[in-house]
Amino acid sequence: MKLWSVALVLLLVSAGAEAEAPAWQAAGGHTQLPLWPGAAPDLQSVPGPETVKSSDKFLAGKPVTNVFNVTRPTMTVYAPTGRNTGAAVVVIPGGGFQILAMDLEGTEACDWLTSNGMTCVLLKYRVPSKPYEWKCDCRPHNLALSVPSLQDVQRTMRLVRFHAAEWHVDPHKVGVLGFSAGGFLVAEISTNFNRSLYAPVDAADKESARPDFAMPIYPGHLTEGGGKLNTNVPVSSETPPTFLVQAEDDYVDGVDQSMVYYAALAKAHVPAEMHLYAHGGHAFGLRPTPDPITGWPRLAETWFRTIGILHD
Image 1 (cartoon, rainbow, N blue to C red):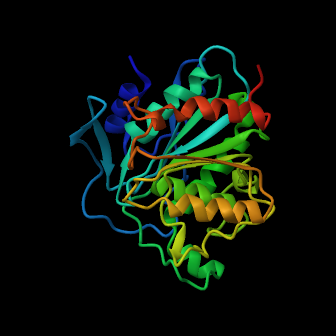
Image 2: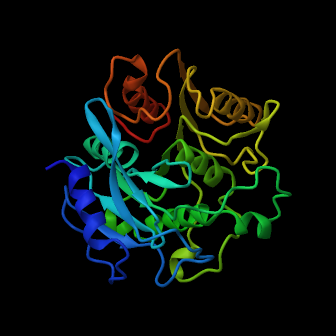
């Protein structure tokens, strides 16, 4: 059975469960853990119960499965198949901070990563979340009020490093991969890993939230208009090496999102690689279509080796 179908069963039967974290399973297995020992910080009300629905729109012959109304965030850990390289990737699905595309931009990414010997940590973060304030003054307390999703990302990064020995993960090879809104969260965690967004809840929160590498795929919300970088993503020399993919005919968020972010990375001398394609639109995930852009995972595998995350 494909990883994505197994994971969706888990989402249905264990959504909202506050169980003690199960033990790590053998290679090829997976397990789901709650992010927070109790209620998540700054928890907000949602329109209804958590639900899983398939869209009417098909991509590459398959529907897209979305999760709605997440209030109990989780991470599902997938062990690598075959040789374990020690690398791990936190995968952050998109959905406009309203829903989560858990297969197209989640479990299908885990299928790819684990086949390359990497541990995949699929994040189910809180949605819908309070709208982001693009032109906030960015003081920590103001940023914290608008980013419950980023709190979940920070917590996930710290938990992965806290469990690194148990999960056979190299704590210096923990990256992030996100799509659309998840791509924006990749940029946020890459530039806001040291911001204090919640009070520490246990020993895991002593770990670093900084990614060792970052992959925003067709990211949104990275500009404030006029070609200016969103002030919520203050790129610096500490921003990790970054791999960007976007299509010029992406009319949902716009190709300028990646271009402006890439320019900021270059200015800060952050190692970055950007791939722009003429066609592909938005939300193509990893599903193969006639558009060449869907071959981007092969380019990413080369990049992993370029930055020393994978070795031949």
